[in-house]
Structure formats: structure tokens, C-alpha cells
Length: 164
Image (tube, rainbow, N blue to C red; front, side, top):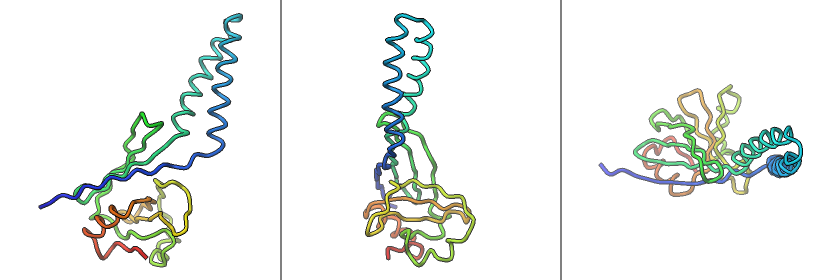
């Protein structure tokens, strides 16, 4: 049996709030380091703002990596191109439907109260590039796969994958 391997990387669009907070915390850290040279409590505040700057920096630049291998999609979150966190692994045998976000085939699933996981860029493009996968009857997963990944998924489950 031949295994199909497809990898796709999608950058999440950064919000202006995260960019603003990152810049603010970096500037506050520099200011409190300078103040800390004269007053010791300023260094403590500089440490706190430095830690806050680090975490906002890590969360301001996020990418999602989809990996399709042997009937399974793995999703990883890559933060600032340096840290990786596994978000989930989804077996395609438990998939109910995979279709574009604005497809009429998803109409019967829209009013369901399902847990929603958004691993896309968050940008609504024309034509719609984001796809919704209903997985295990309880989870809505929003992805933004490339054409090669859609073709690989469609090869495994042709009756569940729609590209309209």
C-alpha cells in the first residue's frame, strides 16, 4: 500500500491588537530597564514587562501546519517560527463531510451546536479557500488546505469530500 504524504503551511493573519501589545511591552521593557539602573524596583517591572513581551511576541506570529499521512490529518501550531505545539490529530474514517465553508452541502450542519476549532488564516477570500470538516459528529474543524491536500483527502473518501 502506498502512503500519501502532503504538508501545508497556513499563516494566521495577525491582529492589530497583538502587534500593538508586542510593541508596547517591548518599549515598556526598555524604559523600565533604564529606570532600573537608578531604582531597583524598576528592574522588577522590567522583568515582568519582558516576560509579557515574550509571550505576546510568540502569539503575534502564528502559523498552522497541516500534515496528511495515511488517512490522518495532524495539525500543529507554529509560534514565531520557533516553537511547535500539536493541536490535534484527526482520523479521516471518523470524518462526516469535508466541504468549502460557504458550500450548500454544509447547510444541515450549520445549526448544530458543535465544538468549533479554527485552524485557518481567518481571512475570508473570494473564492473561499477555507474548508469545514465535521469530525466524529461533535467537532467542526475549519482548515485552509492546498489543492494537493484536498485531492489526497478526496482520494481516500470521495463521497465525503466536496469542492463546489
